Image 1 (cartoon, helix red, strand yellow):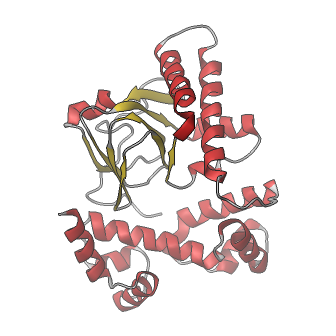
Image 2 (cartoon, rainbow, N blue to C red):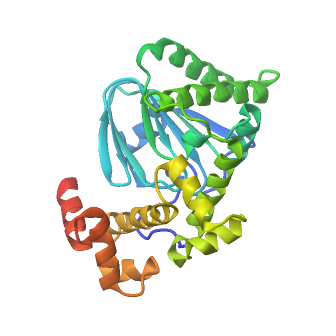
Length: 294
């Protein structure tokens, strides 16, 4: 597995390098509480294990996810998975909350809900729309419960977060064609994605991944195409491309250094790989990204 990207801070909570602040499985705070301390700007950073939900109730937020920016001008929830490079800039009248939690709570929620929380595996922004009042009440209840110490607090917090996860999952499904998915296939795909995360710089063959999962390469490809609309090899290539983009945007490493870091045999091959997937050379991509952020 690669080491942390140079130049991109790794935090538990933004600005904090110590461990989890208490025994809770989650942390809830207002957006204002932390962003006010940093002049309403949270610079690009990553969390090694934390999942985060940014709930924008009112005001505006400029969200940067993996080098791409978007504006949130209406009530919405932004999902940020672990190790995702992200940053925010808020208007001074911002209102909302940030919910942070680790793998232990995710595992508990998946057990409670009886299904993987696929909605947490990729960044996504979900407008609140007509559910604005109910979502506001849900999150404010969660914040109130988090700040208190009433009997059954832990169970109540888990129930409230479960309700929030169900809402986000339903919003994700809007516009997605209904299909039948076997839960074993979902878990198998999750195992494959975790293996890719651990070994993408090693350039393992699809056969090697399939052997570790106890399936054939054909079965693995069929699974990936059915559940992710990509081949097994495309999944690996997209993960390599994501890391390449991170390095080109957020670090000063040369193209040769990025190539070596990602396990390519030589920079020329890396450049061909990158251009085939993006239409730009690594140098052109870095130049374009730098101009866009200026």
